[in-house]
Amino acid sequence: MPNALLETHGPPCVHSTPVVSVLLPYRPESVAAARRFAGSQLREWELDDLMDDAMVIVSELVTNSVETCCRTRMFVGLHRPADHIIRVLVGDGSRSMPVMVQAGPDATSGRGLAMVDRLTHGCWGVTPHPFGKIVHADLTVPTATSQ
Picture 1 (spheres, rainbow, N blue to C red):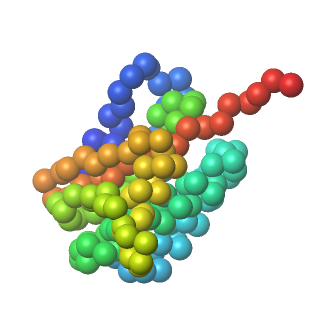
Picture 2 (tube, rainbow, N blue to C red):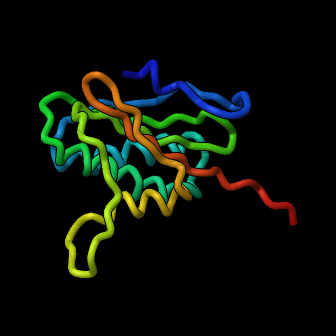
């Protein structure tokens, strides 16, 4: 699976980093573990400004993977393919594709991918693999503004 993760589109990468990843079991407590992993990596990259949005995205994508009830381990990764992009990756063993739905006002679930879509400005997608899929979501790194 990880070889396909390094595919990027657009101009050459200025700041490409390897994918930093962790394998987690399909259990509800993996959502918190994935958040801790992502938070630690973002602090290491000195990207604390992205922490809140990244935590929501990681939580939603890992929750969706937990709900697949696969028996192997899910892949959670972060990648910085360019100076201005952080890519959140969550791979699981299910070929079932995520679908963004219009949750009604009384629905208790179904809003996760809509939040991911909003936080990434539509820059997310799915790459199917023979034994599962990888969902990716891109966050834009804030640029320093001159005063």
